[in-house]
Image (cartoon, rainbow, N blue to C red):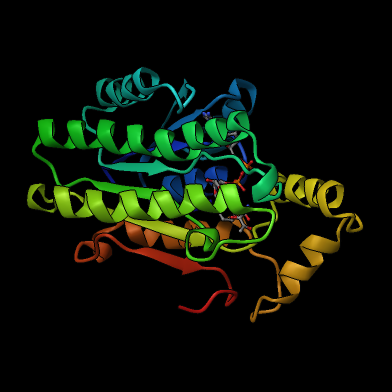
Length: 263
Ligand SMILES: NC(=O)C1=CN([C@@H]2O[C@H](COP(=O)(O)OP(=O)(O)OC[C@H]3O[C@@H](n4cnc5c(N)ncnc54)[C@H](O)[C@@H]3O)[C@@H](O)[C@H]2O)C=CC1
Ligand SMILES: CC(=O)C(C)=O
C-alpha cells in the first residue's frame, strides 16, 4: 500500500469498518493519508483491519459502538477528537438489509432496520456536525445510500425505504449545514460482493423460491459494465467525496453502480 498526501493531516471516522464496503473505505482513506477511526460492533474484525493499516504505517483508533445508540455515536466522535486533535470526515457507512414482502413486514422488522440505517445515520450526522462546528472547521459528512435510495426494489421495500430516508436526510442536512461550511453527500452503490449480498441472496431464495445464487446473478446481469462491484470501486468515489476536489458539492446522493440505475 502506498500513501498519498490527498487527505494528509485529516481524521476520518468510518462506521461499519469491520468488513465489506466500510473496510474498503477505511483502507482507501488510510492510503490517502488520513488517520482513520474504525468503528463497528465486531471488535475482532476491527482489530484485523487496524492491523492491516498499521502494518503499512497508517494511524488508526478502534471504537466498538452500536450506531443505533445515539450516545455511543457521540462518544466515538469525542474519542476521535481526543486521539487525533480534530475530526474532519464522517463516513456513516454501517447498515443492514431486510428481505421480505412489504405486506409481510412486522413492526419489529421495520423498527430494527430504521434504528440502524436511518437513526444510526442521523446520529452520525448530528455528532459530526457538532464536532465540526465546535472546531469551526469545514467538515465532510458522507452517508451510505444505495441504488435502493432511488428505486424501491421488490422484496427489498423496507430496506429501500431506509435508503430513501438517508437520501432525504442528506439533502436536508446539506441545506442546514451549508452556512457552516459543512458538506453532506452520499454514495449509492449497486451490487457489491459483500456478506450483505450473500445474505440478501439467501433470504431471497427463502422468500421467493429462487435458487441460491439466482437473485444475485439476475442483478449482476443488469450491470452495464458487466461485473459485480467491489468495495474498492465504492472507496474510490468516497475518497473523492472526502477530498478538497468535492468542496463545491453538497446534498447529492450519487450512483456508483457500474451502470445499473440511470437517473
Ligand atoms: N453490498 C451492497 O451491494 C450494497 C451496500 N450498500 C450499503 O453499504 C453499507 C455497507 O454495506 P456492506 O459492506 O455491503 O455490508 P456488510 O454487512 O458486509 O457490513 C456492514 C457492517 O456494518 C456493521 N454494522 C451493522 N449494524 C451495526 C450497528 N448497529 N452498529 C455498528 N455497526 C453495525 C456490521 O457489523 C458490518 O461490519 C450499508 O449501509 C449498505 O446498506 C448500499 C448499496 C449496495
Ligand atoms: C444492498 C443494496 O443496496 C442493493 C440494492 O443491492
